[in-house]
Amino acid sequence: MANKLRLEGKVAVITGAASGIGEATARLFVEHGARVVIADIQDELGHQVVASIGTDKASYRHCDVTDEKQVEDAVAYAVEIYGTLDIMFSNAGTLGTLSSVLDMDMTVFDQTMTINARGSALAVKHAARVMVTEKIQGSIICTASVEAILAGAAPLAYVASKHAILGVVKAAARELGQHGIRVNCVSPYGIATPMVCKTFGGDAAPIEASICGNANLKGITLSTKHIAEAALFLASDESAYVSAHNLAVDGGLSSIMKLD
Image 1: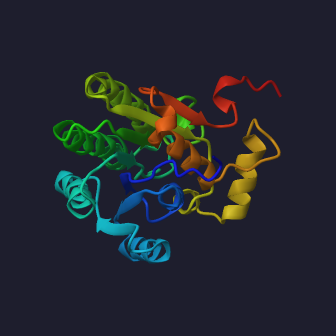
Image 2 (image 1 turned 90 degrees about the horizontal axis):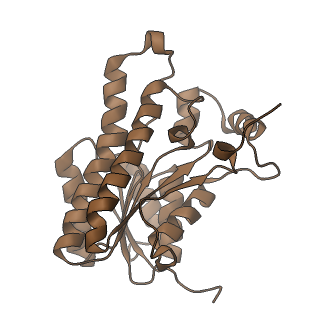
Image 3 (image 1 turned 30 degrees about the vertical axis):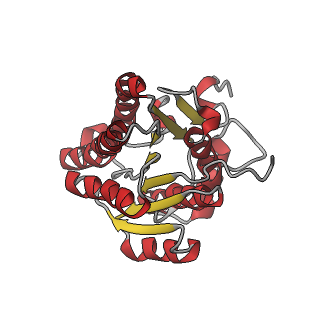
């Protein structure tokens, strides 16, 4: 049973899959028998990931999640080349720029909300259209954040956008549950991904050290693989009766009061 392929025969679209959490998830999904469309704006990285996974198991599609037509086309592309769509993992996102509330740039606020919240809503919409039409009891997953539970380490726009994703998931789960479609989100604690390092303007090692220093669960460093494993659970039949759930992968941080 340890070697069971948990996504055998499934087809997934993963946005933001050219690096970070999305890349790790694409690799893990393929390991478990899925075929994956890597949807991203980082074309060179995306093609490199596909080449390393294997073109028989993965393919790349340029997709800017702020453009509804591109999201719709990414979903249609998956159906065209693989024949179906069982899993949508809406993972593309941005941290925006670091600033105080007093200095907040509303253009950046709008951009962050558009990428994170609206992008997730578009992924849900177009994946659901295929699943409902084809009577596929699929799984839709969105990446939220521990910042959707506890605010503190990220800019206001990012925190607001991730709270919005929780709302998208709950509302969609209510309607799509009538079609047997599950909608959930995963909320990671901090990881020194390329996006995080770029936003905070530092190397991975010191950022990771800071994250670990503030963590509740000691003796382990959260990695993209841990989030990929959470997404795998939500994508697989092991979570067949789980919907409208926010799976926090945060070492208990969001449920525990720090007293020191």
